[in-house]
Image 1: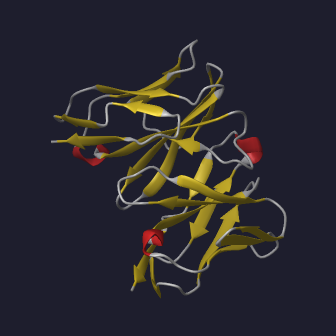
Image 2 (image 1 turned 135 degrees about the vertical axis):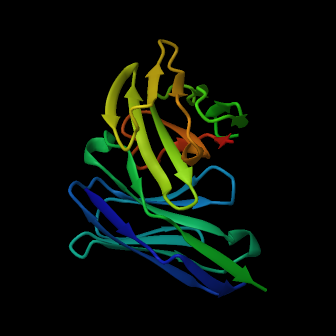
Length: 111
Length: 114
């Protein structure tokens, strides 16, 4: 089975940096995904890590340590529009099992 | 517009009834995934179809069933509905395994059972 843990809620200030952590325990692993979801809307893909290390994409970066079962999403230069839920998800074997999602971290950006 | 189309956007029905949710995947994508999202459970994987065939099952109830048609659109059938089935139902599609580029989600169907 899969177990994915991430904080329920975080608060940060506009213009600052925030790190959202995710730990996972899985019976199969084929990559770790981060999605952004605004309330009532579809999740949108942010990043994918399958090897250890940091992947950078603009203001967003994602890190993976497979040995530790740990990932984080780093958001820089926070903007009010970054207020959303951030979902950590693990891919199964060859993608055939779909993605297993954590319950998401609700990020609140304050002025 | 993500390219994944789901209809209807909203659905209100009574307990015990049956409904059908429809999904058209992004052009060229062969895989369709169905997810249920409720407030307390987060996004739960229900079922995957690949090119018309069932490929993987997640936490899908026996009252629920799905299929993928030759034109690759998919339908999720929910029967004997209960209050607890009220949720957002998302469809996602991918070209193959969905790795690297992730899965593309539709805008969802909000089901309310009264």
